[in-house]
Every structure is written in structure tokens, then in C-alpha cells.
Length: 459
Ligand code: IMP
Image (cartoon, rainbow, N blue to C red; front, side, top):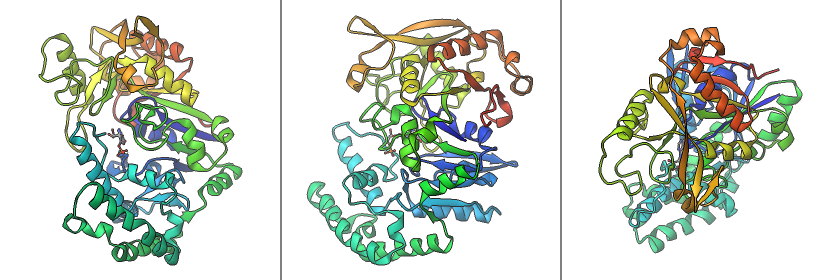
């Protein structure tokens, strides 16, 4: 059977922890979109592993697959595999022949394009990993795929076709001299050919490249459990997210079928778990109707740190939840749960269950609120408008819940759902009713032993 994991908000919902909890019983974990823009920390037998491309389960001995919907930077992949190797692990990772390759020129262009957009304050705030430019090449039918790295002649001729126009974009569109760039070798066909042919040899020697859809189908037919691990979240989905502040792939459940190379019925016959953080956080700019306080530089129209109740509450939640960027240390914007956003996410992906994380963070507050609906142009809306501009005009209508007292996470996790404070259960039950989806598990702390499991998902 299959279990699909999908972020229901803006990323950073704590998907890694849930993949950890439910991934134990999986034989194969497949990433179906994105690339090394995702970041997850896995703690295994007391050791911490930071990964961005290797599927998290691979550390525990589960077979990891990067599906055709992924974009693969071989340099990152081999660095991560080497680092795991130095720590005594030998993960079994397979890569789809059909997955597109991120080349150094994609990364360079990601940076150059963002820099140019920043002149008009229209940058997306990408991770700079070349994700967008690689998916652009895929859609434009000029991308180079993992399978091409194993055929040196094909690789060479494709590079000869693809690279000169990239140089021209840098020079003629952005007015930069390629030879003056720090990474000018990113645009040199000879260097690229040799480096990526060597990556291709390594892929072949390690027998890592597979027809991923067939590989996954064979595993399912042999009775194996397969987990589809989405990266990012619904609101960063290129079709269903807050365009253009999105990544260039489909983290929503439909992406699992296309990006893993299986039928939609394979995904639909299994479980689809929506991961929800008990409140909301957002990195960078863009609308956030349920925001508390604000972050200077990110919250639109917010130039100065405010004072008072909302600001204090925002700081409290930010501190308790550790809502700071892992790499930059930048404070994340925080707010109450946005239920119209979650109704949208549940509809798009068809969640069969919810995993609600970070409930411990809200413990100790007198009152917990949720944005239940929006008002837009005098009308009450229960789901998100499709355009970011209209979403920015939405005002949240709140529902209030009595807060719950702090509790010992491990005791509650071991005793089960009924041991959660009554008010916390009322909050979860509201959510479950609104989304018409049962709560499968509740995260009450960072460790996997701090998860209240109500439903074992594998049959
Ligand atoms: P890109 O994926 O690097 O092109 O970035 C596009 C947008 O997606 C930016 O707003 C990023 O901050 C966001 N993004 C990409 N990956 C993640 C993630 O793993 N978590 C949260 N946001 C992400």
C-alpha cells in the first residue's frame, strides 16, 4: 500500500517528523518533486543528519527513490551520500532516469534573476539552488535528464545546444560578462561535460539509475509499503499556491502520481496525510491574513516593530516554536491557523488523515484563535481566493478557543490521545470537523517519541 505525505501550509510544517514516525514501516520512500531546496534533519540512534536531497528514510535503511518529478543536483546528492558514508552508513538511493539535472548554470541564473528582480522588489526569495531554472528547461523541452548523464555523446551534444543560449541570456538580457562571474565555469561546455560525465559514471557504477515508475510499481506488486514524501507545502505549489511566490513543482498529492510515475489510483487507494502545524508560519513576503504582529522587511507595509498584545504573542510563539530560519536565523512571520487555507489544501489533495504538529507550542496561552473564514468585498469566504492579490485583501474572521495548560509531552504521547488536555482536544476536533478528516497523529514535541499516534496507517 502507499502513504503520501503532503504539507498543508507554507512548508516548515514538520513533515520530516511525520515521515520519521510513519516511515519506519515503509520499505521504499519516494520523493516526487523538488530538489535540494528542501531541508530535513533526521535523528537516528542519537546522531543527527542534515539532508536536502537524500530521502530521510534512507538513513534508517529504507530504500530511497528520487522520482522523475524531482530535479537532481548530482553534486549535492554525492556530497550527502559521501557524508553519510563517512559516518558508517550506506544508504540505498535510486534516481529516476527521467528526473532533470540541475547544472551549475541553473544555480547561477537563479541568483542573477533574483538579483535583477530585487531592483523592483519583485524577487521570490528562492533558495538559490537553481530549482526554477531547471524546471523551466524541462517545460521548454531543452532540459538534460539523469539518463542522459549515462550516455556521454548525448550529454555532450545537449550541452552544446543548451549552454550558448544561457550565456547569451546572462550577457544580452542581464548585461553581465560571463567571464567575470565568480562561477564562469558554470557556462563552459568542456568543464560541464567532464564533470557531469563523471557523475554519470558514478551513477552507473553504483547502479543507482532506474526507471523509477517501474521500480516503484515492482515494489508495490511485491507487496512492499511505499511512502511518497512531498517536500515544501500546498501554498508553495506552482498551481495551487500563492503564485508567483511558489516553487516550480507540485507538492500536492496529484504531484505524487505524476512525479513518481504511478497511476493516480495508486496514490488515491492509499492514505494521503496532510501535515498541519497548529499555528501558521511564513518565510519572506506575501499575504498572511491571520498574521500576529509582523516582521520588518517581510510583512507587507510593516516598517517598524510594533508593540502590544499581538506583537508579544507573536514573539512568544516564535520563541516557543523556534520559528527562525535554519540557515539564516531570520525570524519567521507567525499567525493563527488559517482554516480557509487548510480547506483549500484538503480539497486539492484529498487528505484521508491529518497530522497536527507543534501543539505543545500553544500550551500555556489563555486563548487560542483560528481564522475560521475571510471577508472579501463584503462577502464571507470559506476557502482561499485563487489570486494572491485578492488573498491579500482578505480579512480573517476569528473563532476563539480556551487555551490548554502545558503538559508533559512524553507522558501524553505514551498514554495516548485521551491524555491530551480537553481544550486541546476541542481544538483538534474543530479542525477535524471543518476539514472532514480524522486526526491521525499529534506532534507534541520535536522528537518522534513525542508524537501521539491515533492511527497506524499501514494495513
Ligand atoms: P525555490 O524552490 O528555491 O525556487 O524557492 C521558491 C519559493 O519556495 C521561495 O519562497 C522559497 O522560500 C520557498 N521554498 C522552497 N523550498 C522550501 C522549503 O523546503 N520550505 C519552505 N519554503 C520553501
